[in-house]
Amino acid sequence: MDCRIYYSLCAETSRLEANSVGNRLDIPLPEYPLEVVFVLVKPAFSGNIGAVCRGMLNFGFDKLRVIGHDGEWDEETRKRAKHAQSVLENAQIHDDWESCMQDVSVVIGTSGKRELGSKIQFRHFLNPNELIENFQGLTGRLAIVFGPEGMGLLQDELRQCDLLLTIPSWEGYPILNLSHAVTVVAYSMYTKINDSTDEEKPMMNPDQRRNMRETAARIAQSLPLHESKKRGAEEQLIRTLMRSAPDEFEAHRLLGILNDAAKALEEFED
Image 1 (cartoon, rainbow, N blue to C red):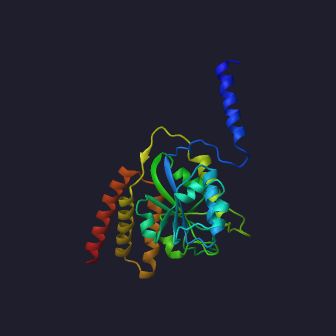
Image 2: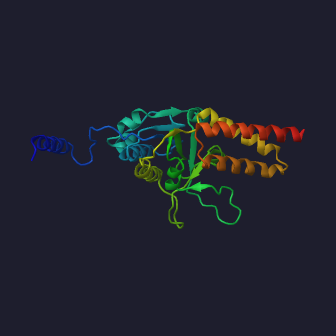
Image 3: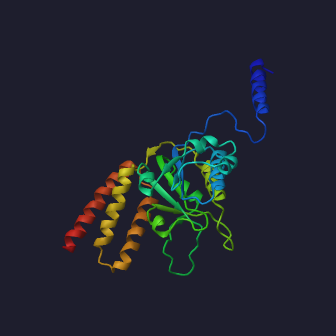
C-alpha cells in the first residue's frame, strides 16, 4: 500500500476512534446552496428546543430562530441538545414575526392539521421533497416555521407564510412531535438539497417578497368579488406565485406586471 494512503487511513481511524459514538466530529458543516433557517414560534417545552437543535445538526443545519422566548436555556434544553450546544448558543431570539422574517426571501409554514371535506381553506400544502424540487438551482435564505406544541401555527400565522408544508403521515394520527417534525424536514433537505445543477441563481430578495405580497393583496382587493372571497383570492395568488419559485430577475419582471395589473384594477374601481 502507498505510504501516503496508509498514513492517511491511520489518521482518519485515529480521529474516529477519538470520538466515541454520539459525539460530534470536528469537521465543517455541509455547504448548501440554500441557507435554511428553522424557526420555532413560542415553543412550550424547553426539552423540545434542545431536541430540535440536535435534529438540525444531525443533518448539517445550524441556523435557528425562536419567536417569543427569552433566550435563557435551562438545563433540560441543554441536556436534550447534547452536542448541538452551538446551535443553541447562536440561535436568534425575536419578539415578533416581522423582525424574524425581515431578511428572509421565502417563508414556509408547517402544519399537520388535515381539513376534511370539499371546502378546504388551504389547498396548497407541499411535502418536503416537492418543496426542495421547487427551489433547486436557487440560492438565498428561506425560513421553515414550526408552531407551538399542541396547536401549531395559527390561521393568521399560516396566512403570513408564502408556502405551506406538511409531512405525509398516517391520517389516523398525523401530528408529529415538534422535534420529530423538524428532524424529518431536516433529513429530507439533507438528502435532496445537494443535488447539483449546472447553474445557480439568487432567489427573490426579501424586499421583492414583501412587494409581491403587497401587490397581490392590492389585486385581490380590487377584484369584483364579495369581501368574504377576497382574502381567499389573495392567498391563492400568493401561493401560486411563490410555488413557481421565481429567481431575482423573474421576480423583478413579475412585479412590474403585477403592479400594472393592480393599477389598472384600481383605476377601473374608481
